[in-house]
Length: 446
Image (cartoon, rainbow, N blue to C red; front, side, top):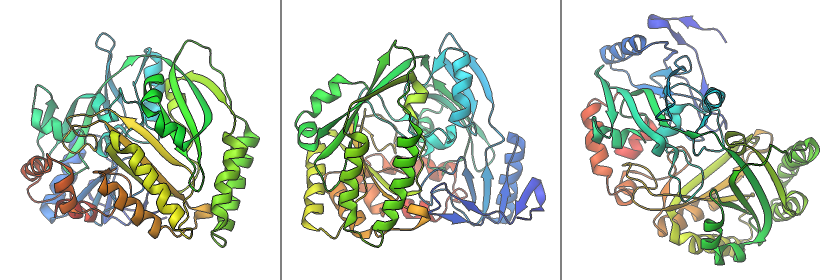
């Protein structure tokens, strides 16, 4: 690829594509600033030429939230750890730092983040911007660990935001969707370094749903995987431990079987969709039908390699609606045998918060994540599954994950989010000309 150097160290001819390769774009100009001053120059040029600006991080969002045909700012060169306050157990970082690079820095100081998503090849700014979450009913989404941040507005002003300074902006900016300005720095509340033991064991959907409260009490970071077209469930507990690190990794089972064989069989099923149910049951029996344990540093247990390109939907519903929603999804699949669903449906739980556009705003939530894999990059029929799932999610009061695929518009979000008008007012004040909008965000706000 040939790049043409342009003004303010920008490049033409760059094609952006997300990790899942489900969306891409060709921004008019692509920038990799190394300082606040350089970002200010880009914003000044955008104002002068009436261009839109999109800030991107790791590009892991499997939606078009990061796409633009205007100016794109990649924050990868603003990735430093700025300060570690061991007394307060807080770390201040530039927004472009990858969590994968932050973990070893925290290790050096005996610190850790109390919760993490499944992927660490994502930036701090991106993680909070889209409401990234994991599981643990005692824990909020990752943005709840943010105690302060700095925001560069469309007009070039830097705002210091926390609960005691620009509090309303802070309440909005912890899930900012990239539409309030450029997040420059983030201060995260950490905890002392800790180890986790992960224990997984087989169960049934009926057992887990009938004893959901018991499972939530038994494990700090409880989640489960349901294998559609079956009763099979893999229950996963993650809890603090003092046990030394031990691994259950095995190249043959994890890669030869769990990746290469699975990808080949899923590719075959694109020609014979009736095989999907058999594949789900076969792989549960092969890989998930026995008890497994391993332990390690927390960030090594929380995160795992996301091997498959995939289409993903992930909605947060009221926790008490978990059983109703899952059983309705199961009933729908049984009633429509031609609708096929790859495994797993991943079910996680998160504490409520007060962040304006957090899917967990003012309620404890269950996240129900559905996946359709793309074997060898091939798209698979998913529309019927998608529509049925979204219908169920809306029926039980769900809110979609901002980084994942969905078909919602402003009218939906006005019903879903009590604080939606407040967020809109803050956005319009900080960015009155819509510099930070794109086609995805236009569907959200117009």
